[in-house]
Amino acid sequence: MKRAEGSFETLSRHEVPKEFREEHVLMGFRPVNRPLTYYLCTMFTMHNEVVNVWTHIIPFGLMLRVFLMIVKEDQELTKQNLSKDDQDSTSVGTGTTTESPNRTFYLFMCTVLAYLLVSALAHLMHSASKSVHYLAFYCDFATIAFYSFLSAVAFYVYSATPAFFARFNWCYVYVAWTLALSIPYACCFAKFKFTRPYPPEKKLYILGTIGTLYLWNIYPVVDRIANGDLQDNTYHYLHLAAFLSAVFFYSSGWPQKSFPGLCDHFFHGHQIFHVLIAITTYYQVLAIRYDMKNYVNDDSNSDKAKGSGNQRTDCWSEVSSLFAIHALFSLLVIRHFYKKIQKVLAEQKMQ
Ligand SMILES: [Zn+2]
Image 1: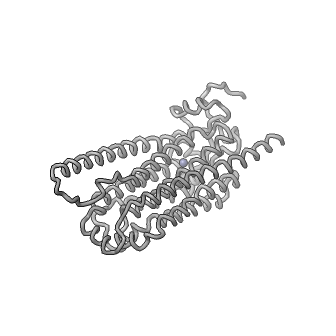
Image 2: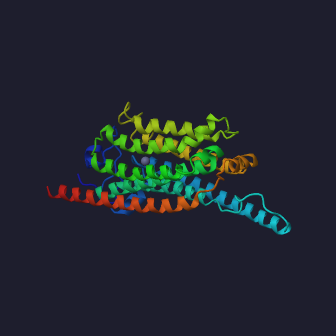
Image 3: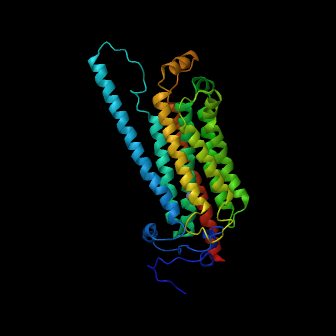
């Protein structure tokens, strides 16, 4: 039975192409091949992707607010320091952090906003066609890789102990960058290669690359915990706990696996994963910001850093160039796999 073009009626899994069939989800699929405006409007209708959209749109709004508050706070701090220096012309200055605009942290915040927004858009728009479906999730993987790379850098720059910073100064950022480059390639490859129902290998490609970078990313924090040098920054523990819970819901397929059809609209594991990963990011931002204010600027830490021969920097010159190459590489990877999938889809049409 043909449905009216403007109708927001949803379909069962057997009425949509297999690329769109979620495991253990029976109902609530949107029709494919409608205009893009149709999918934008579905943000306000009930279907099995709407919770995935809102669970990243709401955190996007909240994180944007947090980011703007931080920028404002930094601007006021810089102003106060400038007027203090003007009043006291003999002042030699006590630090550099208030004079520099925390560029690495700001880039990290931009990647947070990018991954939340692109993920929400991918879930909202992917049903438009098979091509859009693949393109949307390729872009999603690319922004996850940007965020993972900058997460590692931010932990290293703002949360590592002075000794850790000095010991890994020659390689930390480069290792994180190399691991981050593997994410878009491996994830796009897995999305291209495996078709539904997905074999466990697909998750291995995704979790293997993102997980390896996460282990490197969290190394400075684990080292600090091991050194008993975490001060009162419990946000790091909250971030770790939320991340591990998120991984469980992403990889286990639970609860929908135990209750097929009952999680079609609410309480699907991917929705819970979205919420937990947003909480992870929120505590991560709070943890890093806390360290920027209370740990990096701590005089005893500055002294230790000087003593170790490697004064802490924001690594901006390396990070900005590596990030630019990373962005270009990701675009090329997306283009490569998009062309490949277009070819496959064209061949399918001919058959
Ligand atoms: Zn998602």
